[in-house]
Picture 1: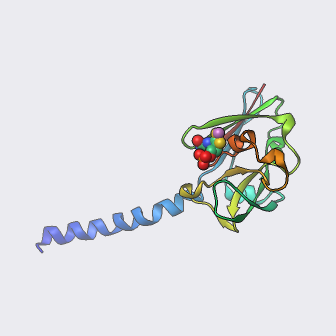
Picture 2: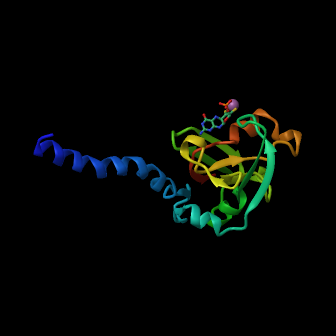
Length: 164
Ligand SMILES: Nc1nc2c(c(=O)[nH]1)N[C@H]1C(S)=C(S)[C@@H](COP(=O)(O)O)O[C@H]1N2
Ligand SMILES: [Mo]
């Protein structure tokens, strides 16, 4: 190896290390954005640490996306929207890939659905439908085993917006 080649190899090492570890580091930094169409409310950004500060709801259920029962932990969607203090009829939920679904705010229950931050106790990577996934306790009630509930089960959730 010539001197030039060796210095190139030395340069490449930190870049290689960055490439390997940066995704894991970036994961925890993805924040959930909350906003309202009404201009008077500020936009909130909640990262995993901020979401962990709220009262947590946990349930175990089977899903159409996982093998067997899994335990989800997270914050009720209703709790998060209350933080905004925004008036509105509808919550619009947008994923990292811009998949969008809406839900009437009147249909939010105190503890269903939740914005899950963990599956079986572990944070979810983007590859595993994380870092945030709106989930229902599908096994608890037939109304959660509907196409409506499934379509609202948005994974890789990125933004929540309250609209009129
Ligand atoms: N981020 C994201 N979440 C999503 C979707 C999507 O395309 N992207 N599809 C929704 C719809 S309409 C349904 S029915 C289910 C589809 O799940 P499946 O594609 O695994 O059948 O996930 C919901 N959550
Ligand atoms: Mo769907």
